[in-house]
Length: 235
Ligand SMILES: C[S@@+](CC[C@H](N)C(=O)[O-])C[C@H]1O[C@@H](n2cnc3c(N)ncnc32)[C@H](O)[C@@H]1O
Image (cartoon, helix red, strand yellow):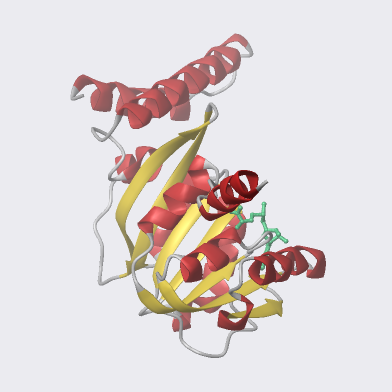
């Protein structure tokens, strides 16, 4: 009985999150206030406090039911007092400056619309972004709006590839098509990056073939495939 209780306690303490969530958590830097925008279950806000990455966290979600999950988890994990909870859109409910913010598990278009409405107050905020799709659209928006991508990597979580981007507002930036379509820091990094690029190549090749068969313009796919070949050639 006692042994079982100790084992349960050990399991509880060494809670293992998905590789995607762990990758996000690992990129966080120590800070005073961290915002978890679109927190849903609240893993990021809760763990940032538990791991003493942030002294205080602010969890925001559009939907009350999602926010409630974060409230419940924070109570269960004993960190409720250190997190403020808001139902709301993006950064809108937050009044104080935050030194770090995570926006994860949403489409790149949603992430950029959240950033776009808060742009003026994000000059000193480190951002960790994890788009589920439209990564190229998000990267382009970041560069056009003077957010430099300082770090970027691929996580393979159960066969699905996720991109994690660390970014912060910077001065004027130079960027290339390669930085937008493949990622400034992704090529030549890891085995996961290579697998991601190969999968991307295969997808593009199929789209190009389909367009060609239907006599549609596939010059964009051809251009991207050429870029990928260039990257693979240097691997
Ligand atoms: C799929 S969940 C991702 C949860 C968590 N961030 C993660 O990475 O696992 C996306 C959450 O973002 C919330 N959301 C979507 N758009 C939002 C916005 N503009 N402002 C705040 N929350 C938003 C949704 O309600 C949902 O709970």
